[in-house]
Every structure is written in structure tokens, then in C-alpha cells.
Amino acid sequence: ENTSNKIAAGEVVERPASVVKELIENCIDANAKNITIEVRDGGTSLIKITDDGTGIYPDDIEKAFMAHATSKIRNKDDIFAIKSLGFRGEALPSIASVSKIQIRSKCRELDSGIQLNIEGGEVIDKTETACADGTIIEVNDLFYNVPARKKFLKSTSREMSLISDIVNRIAICYPEISFKLYNGTRKVLHTYGTGNLIDVLRTIYGKTICEQLIYFEEHNDIYSVYGYIGKEEISRGSRNNQSIFVNKRYVKDRKLTVAVENAFKSFSTVNKFPFFILFVESYPELIDVNIHPTKSEIKFKDDRTAFKIIFDTVHKALRNDVM
Ligand code: ADP
Ligand code: MG
Image (cartoon, rainbow, N blue to C red; front, side):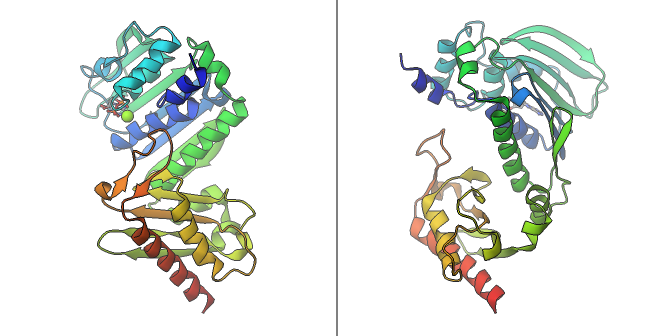
């Protein structure tokens, strides 16, 4: 059988960064205001996520993990087979089946919390515990029972930088939440949850870059478009500093990218790639996200209208800046 197809099929548990993404999304769903992510060895030995969200009721905690993670999951074929069931509601079972997890969780209205230890998808311990309101999940030894998947991972520094990219993007989408990311004992990101996008950008990109940013914003019946575009001084020879979020989901889209770049080119003398962060919000039914579920591709059903409002909005902001 074709190993690379299987690898491409692993949507949730592809690599440490995808685990981090799923776990953080759960914290956000639980209304957390403070989320701390601690990573060791590129996430292969430890991913620990602490939140101050709603917590999980003691009676629900096994359900959250065990939905589809059965003792049948013992090798990579079984794990990839999970994919065919779809991954909605399957992140925790999937992650639990390929790691050793300890979760501690406490609901605000209860006096004590609950701790659960799971190894390779099997509960090995459940006890009452004293802990702060919210949830702490430790994912240890990711892929310890899937050597093939482990071999497929890149260097720990590369996996760490993929984690860092994901956390940065989520932090950009949620300025009202405070995020801390540690690589070992080193703090590599700290956003403060002020609710202001520019504060998050300053943390990630630095003061100098943020001084060169121009804000743009426009709304109509169908689209909300806003973000920041960098002045010529911070444009680059590559598209590395370009991010697009559609309904808070990081996407790569050539048309939307070109809309911003074309507006930029009207004012730029040197043909470089602008720095930009673009948010587009619209009705979910106007977006076709299912071109490829594992890739960050999207398509607006009416992409000419999307293109136009993005171009016009960025163009106007740059023109106002020149004048
Ligand atoms: P989904 O998020 O699609 O429901 P998951 O497997 O990611 O599926 O999570 C399963 C369930 O576990 C969630 O629906 C939620 O009830 C609970 N859960 C997971 N993480 C947290 C968390 N950090 N805080 C509160 N509840 C959580
Ligand atoms: Mg989830």
C-alpha cells in the first residue's frame, strides 16, 4: 500500500502542530481567556495545554476521549482508517490513540476536578484531583506506538516552528485571548488578550514592522474585509509575510492574494511582495471550503465580487496614506 497516501489521509494527527491546533480550538470552544502551550522536543515528547475555560464534567470526561478510540487502534492502518469516519468530534480520541495523555479538568461550580490517564487510547487511571478551574491536557510521547508516523516527522526545530506558526495564526485571530507559548522553558510568544489586533501583531512581528503598517477596512452586505498592509519599506522578495484568514480560518488563496498585491502594485515602484494580514468574513454558505479538507484552500462562490472589494479596500487605504 502507498504510505504517502496514508500520511496525507491523517488529518487530525498528522504531526505535533495539528495536535496543538485541535487542542487550542477546544480551549477556545470552552471560552478560555488564557491559554498556555508548553512544548518539548518539537511536540514529540510533550505538548501541554492549560486553559481557564469551562472544564469538563467528571461524567463526560471519558466520553470526550473514547468516542471512537477503541482497543482496535493498535497500528497505523487502524489509525488511518479512523479518517474514513470523518474527524469531527474525533480529535481527542485520535490524539489519545497515538500518545499518552493526562488530562485534569475542573468545572467552576464543582469543588474538585477529575484526572484521567490514557495510554494508546485506553484509560489506565481516573481519580478525583484538586486543580484550578479549566483544563490541562498533557500529550506525552506522541506517535510512540506509530513508528512509521514518527519517522515521517521533520527535525524537532522544524516541528517547533510549525507549531509556532499555528499558534501565531490562532493568536492573530483571537486578540481577546491571551496566549503563551513555551519551547522548553523558553517563552516564545506572549499575547495579552487586549482585544486589539495590532497588539498581537506587535508581539509577533515587532515594533518596527508595525510602524510601517496601514489599516484597511470595508463592509458590505456580503463581505467584511479588514487587515493591515505594509508599506513598501517592509515588502519582501517572497510571500512569507502574507496571511489570509477567511472566517478566522487560515487559507491560501491565489485570487485573494493577487487582489491585495495588485492594489499594492498601483503604488509601489519596485515589484515586491507586500506584507499583509487580510481578514475576510462572509456567510459560510457563500464559501466552498471542501475543495480539499486537509489543505487550506477555499473558494468564494462569487470570487469576482470578493476580489473587487479586497482590491478596492486596500487600494483606498494606500491612496489615503499617500495623500
Ligand atoms: P469536538 O471539538 O469536535 O467536539 P474533540 O475530540 O476535539 O471534538 O473534543 C471532544 C469534546 O471534549 C469536546 O466536544 C468538549 O466537550 C470536550 N473538550 C475537549 N477539550 C476541552 C477543553 N479544553 N475544555 C472543555 N472541554 C473540552
Ligand atoms: Mg475539537
